[in-house]
Figure 1 (tube, rainbow, N blue to C red):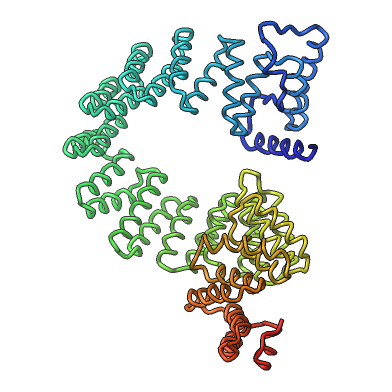
Figure 2: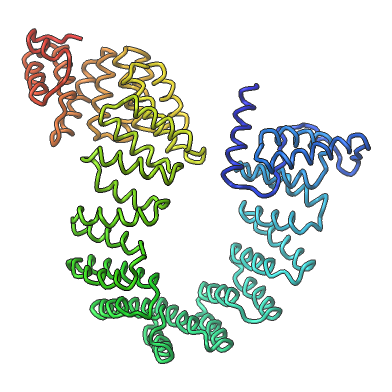
Amino acid sequence: MTFRIMNYTTKITATLKKTGAILSILLFLSSGSLFAQDSSQWVIDADNQRKFDYYFYDALNAKAQGNYAEALNLFQHCHALDSTNASVLSEMSGFYNVLQEKNKAIYYLRKAVEIDPDNYYYNMMLASLSSELDQKDEAIDIYNKMLKAHPDKIDIFMSLAEAYNNKGELEKAIGVLDELEQNVGVREAITLNKFRLYSMLNQKDKAFEEIEAIIKKTPDNLGYILLLGDLYMQDGQLDKSLEQFKKVEAIDPDYPALVLSMVNYYEKTGKPELALEEINRALVSPMLEIDVKLQLLTRYITMLQSNETDTKIANPLFTTLFDQHPNNAQLNLLYGSVLMVQENETEAMKQFEIYAKAEPTNPAGWEQMLRIALPDSLDKVVDITQEALKHIPNAYQFYFYLGGAKYQQEKYAEALVVFEEGLEVIGDENPPVKSDFYAQVGDLNYHLGNKEVAYENYEKALKLNPQNLGVLNNYSYFLSLDDESLDKAERMSGITVKAEPTNATFLDTYGWVLFRQGAYTMSRIYIENAVKYSEDNPSAEVLEHYGDILSKTGEDEKALEQWRKAKELGSDSKTLDKKIKTKKYTE
């Protein structure tokens, strides 16, 4: 029992750290008294009240300091002393919500509202949770009740409109927004919501009238005129769309967002050459901000690629932009990506190095450099990842690259240290990634002769991700080599073959496990499929296994043929030469 509670506490601590919960989470583990007590008759005496206060504030303090396990125990005492405290119930609801136990969360929140029916926070949380659980009527009832109590709260209006929308009562949703608009006037958020709702009702005229209304209110805001043009364009009303764009152009031809809208318009009307001209003109203009230019440049490159035009014609634009914005590293990152498309890895690496130096805490530069270095330049991979970890010590992906490089360099002990360090920085919110790290730790321990430790780490990996095919394959193969738990090995390997029936490695492992079980006929079927699916890249190990099976089924000459092929492929098997010499299978 102690072990289960410790694991549960660990889950709480990790989950709360991940979400960064601001409010205290009051924790309670299945107290039968909660459901048995009549809240209307519950009275806490003075002595218990003092205890409650002591535990409650100590719990809040522990939570504030991040000591969630300690807070858990203290809040348990609070709830045991007074299970009708609305704050406790609300916080418990928050806790169960974090743990994705939604039914418990809504139960405790309903109890909190029952005890403190006028509490704004409790009601809003309950309505939100009800919506999430598809209990639409309950959410609508709560928002309507809250609106009567707080008619000045814009958030309630917006939430009620969304609740009606979720139920499919779109006209009621519009009615709520109309009432809000009467109270606070025309506002962008309200207008856009009404546009969306009218569009869903296929009442296009009313939808566009909403945008026109906000333009009338703020005629100097070019963004709204442009928005109307964009919406007309989305609706296929291209003439009206262009009319709005021309209005903006007449007022301010250098309005930044106009370029993007015109590019979209030209693409929509089948005039890609005009779209390219628009982008080209804008990129060399000193009037546009660099962020807009980066958007346009990205679009420009994409259009060149889609038109199968040589992207090298964009390179002079980068030269111009570097002159205009010499200290903007985003340009280097984008230019490096374009050079990669052009297969100019040497120059691309220089651009990524500039970016990484300017933005060392952004993983993008380091990751792009790794794309170039992998898989051939292992020393370069080590250098890049070690430098990256100096600036981003919690970036687990670089531990994986670094450990993998050292693994391929056969520096197994060093690689193991790297993967173990990586495990320390991976949060519990990434179980598949953590599973892969445990897999590498398992493989490395096996190579280092620590078989039991290897198997322990494989088990940890599978607990986090039962479908980790790499672990299932390696674990089952190593068990078969050691003649251990062959039934378990067969079950695990069978999962991989079912998942990827043409994967030669998985087929070879499954065939080999069957071979170790003595099921030679079945083993031969899977090994022959492994040979078939690895014809483009034949494996010495697969061919040796095929020869082993043929030898066991009395086909010595065919077995010899396969062993010789394995030898030609450079097999490092310690028994292959003896098999070839004796023409017999030997372990």
